Amino acid sequence: MTKIAHHIPDEMLAAYAAGRLPATFEMIVAAHVSMCDACRAALETHEMLGGTLMETAAPAAPLEGDLLERTLAQLDAPVEPDGAARTPPARMGIYPGPVAEALHHGPPRWRAAGGGVRQQILAEDGKSSVRLLYIPGGQAVPDHGHGGTELTMVLQGAFHDETGHFGPGDVEVADESLEHTPIADAGAACICLAATDARLRFRSLLPRLAQPFLRI
Ligand SMILES: [Zn+2]
Image (cartoon, rainbow, N blue to C red; front, side, top):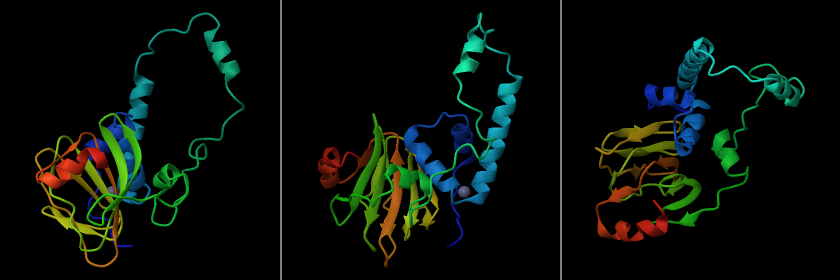
């Protein structure tokens, strides 16, 4: 695998550690961290700092009466120590564990999205969404702006746009100020995981007409 060059911004890792990211972005961060030692190490630092904050914070309120006892009684048998408690979902081919989980460990069910592009929406939550995109080699995604933030992570192949070149594991962070035209590299289809927290703004008429249908 080629080396990952485009990472999750540190403030986003901090927000993820604090549980403050939209669920649709969480999947991309989890997928990238599963492939990137550097971001995994940075995330562990944030989680450690967050844990220290929680330990030093004053308790919110004393537990009343026998609440503590009753709560403890309801807990299940002793759990595995940290780390072994939750086995991360297994990778499935090009799909990192969190994506494989969202696919219910089966192949994607692609739907045509125009111009040879195919997609499968994995999760939607109000205005935000996360989807798999299949872009044939050499194919462009219509240029668009962003009402909010768009995160795109490459799973197979590569794409390039005005800001750079993105291969497997790389994450592009696009914000409101960026208008770009991603183009898949020639060769194998580019498969990406893309998450948005607001609707995209397409400049040309055709994608705008198709937008409600594509639910981008
Ligand atoms: Zn990284």
